Length: 250
Image (cartoon, rainbow, N blue to C red; front, side):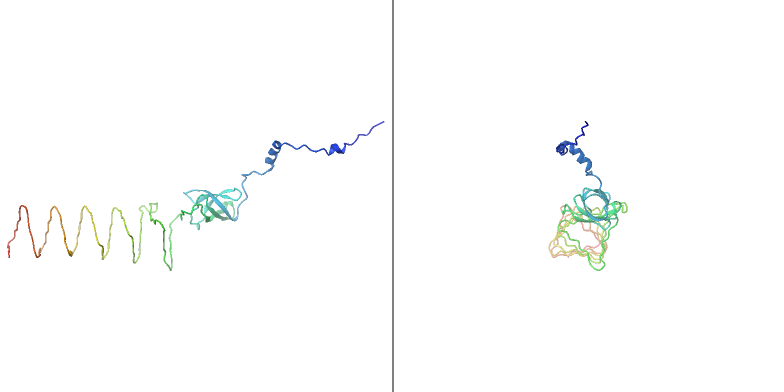
């Protein structure tokens, strides 16, 4: 008599599966999950990014977009404010190969800002004026470049006015060419090694006292020399000489 094989019991089929240890599941999860450092999709349109690093020699900066995607972008010509590490910038373009930094939205350090261009910079107002105001120091500096071998500072105006409480000037040479010069002040002190003065006519008035102290004094007049005073004193320790074709006394 043949005995048919019994089907497996329901209890055996429904036996619970023993869970795998966590140590065996971790390699499977890492294998199925995408890589964290996998480059993101191409960026197009306008997006925000954070500046990671900047090259001071050119206009390129390394940026980090949302999701950790890093890319290298060039600063647009209209973005005069130079980005710094940590700044939030606005990036626009058609793709990763044509993206530009168009604006600096927020600065990480608001205490310092730099406006920079590659070529000559001209500020022009067609109908109004231009005012530069500084709460601190105002510095004007011209550096030697390839285009100009000698640094230059040029100022042209119909009329100028300078109000400075205290001014210190240091230079190697000063040349002034004017038609009329007027100096008004309470005191004037001049310390020189040599003074060379050429005039066609000289007129000087001293209301009180004038002192001259010199090692030697040589006065020569081609026509007339006149000394006149209420009291005149001529003294000498060794010699007084008066020489002329005619001498009138009294």
